[in-house]
Image (cartoon, rainbow, N blue to C red; front, side):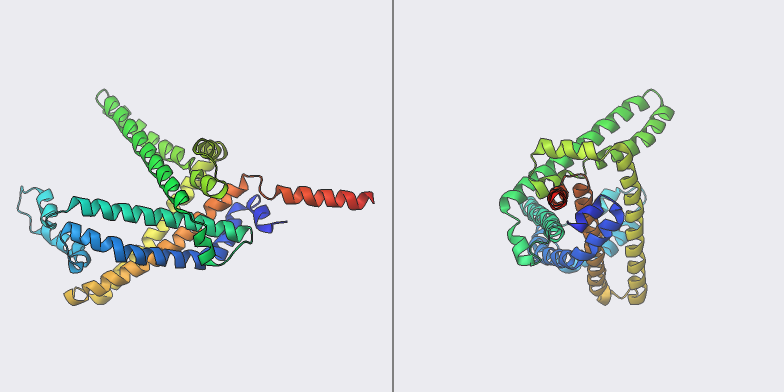
Length: 312
């Protein structure tokens, strides 16, 4: 009997934590690997595409604040923003974004594959797991990821268009419907949280994955996940903000240390992102296997064996 699978059907939060602890090191190593590859390939392309040096990137926040402070009254703030960029090379920016997207989606597939291998006691070797992340699966996942994002953007676009129309009739009614409807729409989007796990864990078709996720993540369950998500985002944002504030206070406004501050903050953000990602993907796998038949075969086999033994 697979104890981890059985625990998913009980206390799913505690089971998610169990899986999180088992996969944490491999997730962190994968996050670091992807970040290093992205930094080595995509970041130089972005800098070249924007006409920036690395110092420009690390000093961007300071330069941006100074530009806004030096604005004359009545000046267009967008001019200050555009002044920070050189001659933008659009093809290079698009190439950098494409590479970053491929690397990020590769990591998403790898995270779920790590979970799957740990849950079913398969290979614990990262190289073996990475080999399971085929290009076909990555590009298929990219297509689904883009489709999901298009669906989300289109849904919110239609929602705001409707609110705008209502607002032309009554601003008060539009404000109430907009406020309530915005959160309802967010919760509805949460109902598709299991689409990627369904495709990566069990190779379901697009329609099957959407149907499975929408059926299993009911509106009530989606609301609970949404509330947990809000608390989670607030907590991680506060931790990152406090750490950044401490580093900035410790290093002061010394321009020679701005690059050091940037590197330290990025490193801490990488660790927090790795921890957050490990928990989120562990929770997604736990939720997915909670609502599947995986593990029931073991129970049926045990019941059959017990029946045979008893009858003898």
